[in-house]
Every structure is written in structure tokens, then in C-alpha cells.
Length: 286
Image 1 (cartoon, rainbow, N blue to C red):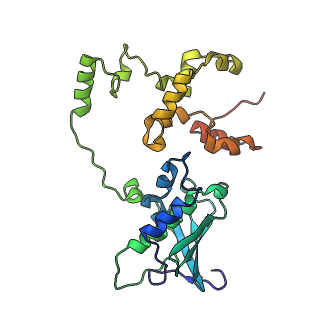
Image 2: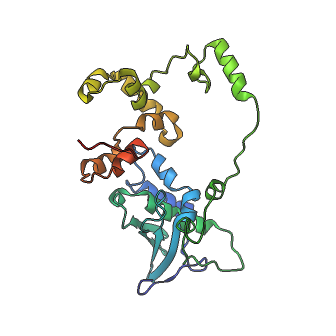
Image 3: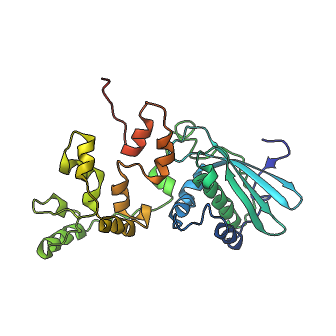
């Protein structure tokens, strides 16, 4: 614990209500931008990540300002170094002054860890009062996986109750699709007469299967996107993580979120390529 700070608990944590939260987000371009369309912000704000990742919360009050610091576990590398995050709240003016992540490479543009911590404090403000005081100076549940916590199930992580009804809906949709020649059925793609959707045909794996060029230059010359294709892709993938097409078209491509890291990569261990391609692969040394 840093000098001058005390352990945070449900009794001393500052309150951040919806008005304070909305005012801060609306005036902060790092989290509210036409380019993001708030999709990344909503992903970072989800309780299924923040509630299990925040740990070692401490705070210090100086006049009207309350500074809250914590450690947050990376979502995809739970055994990596914890990221330090801080939040400053003016309790008299009831405003959020700033929220920062100090260790993430994307911290200058408002990273997911800062948003996750801000929403975590907000959710603690919305928790119903209880007779006991809960201390927040503890190791996060997510970072305990593999050490004191042997494993964590997907159900516990998402705090959801998945419903898997055993119905014939998919089969009925397939029969109806064959009859009406529909293309948006899960089983249709396995039929010989299936014609791939134009936008799906623009994915990297489908393009590779189509042209099968061994030379990179020949492959790039073969791939031609029209202005209509580009406009249709932009329109259909605006919801980003809610769109299946968004995931399909991202595979095997250097997207804007990876462009900075890709342009400055100086290692040859294949880590960055594994992130882009979705898995590690071996290369032969010539």
C-alpha cells in the first residue's frame, strides 16, 4: 500500500452515480467517439470482467478530492503483471476528474482497464447497503486462477444462466431454407449448391481458398474490392463485437487496433502473428 493511502471498503469508497458517470463519459473523447460508436466502451464496462479483475483497492482523501488506486488483472493473460489504475473524484462538486491506466500500452487513448475500474466503482455505489463492511483490499478472482483457485467455469465468470433448449428450430429452418432458397441458415453452407454470401467471401480465409496463390504479390493482385463492397462492409459491421461478419473479416488482417503494435514489432517469436491469426504456428528457417 502506498504512503498516505488506506484500504478501500464499502464504508469509505466514494459514490459515483449515473449522472456523474454520464457527464464524465460525454465530455471525455477517449471513451466517447464517433469512431468507436461506444462499442468498445460497452465491452470494457461489463460486470463479468471488472468484478473479477479488480483487486487491492486503496484510497486517499485530500480536501475535496478522493484518489482511488487499484490493480486490475489483464483479461487474456491472467498470470501477467497486474495493471495499475487510478481514479480521481471531486466529492464536493460530485464529478469524476480523471481515470487512468498506468501500465497498458493503450493507456494514452483511454484503455479498457480504466473503463473497467470506473464502472467497478460505479457498481459498488449501486450496491445495496448491508450491515457488514466489505473490504476491497484483496486479490482478484481472475488472477487467482491456476494458483489458489484451481479453475473457474464460464458460468461463474459470466454470472449468467445459459439456456440451451432442445428444439428442432435449426432443422426446421434448414428445411424451410431449402424450400425457399434462403442463404442465412447454419446448415445451408454444407450443401453442394450453396453460394457464399458476397461479404463473407471477402474474408481472408475464403479469399485464400479461392485464389490459392503461392506468391503474395499475385494474391494481392487477384483480390479486388469495389467501393460498394467497402461501403457494405462498413455498414454491416458497425456493431463490431455483436456482428458475426466483424469477427470473420478481422481474422488474418492487421486491424486499426493492432496497427501501432504491428508497425513497431521487432521480435520474431510469433506472438504478434498468433494474435492476428488466432493461434501459434511454426515457420521453417531457410
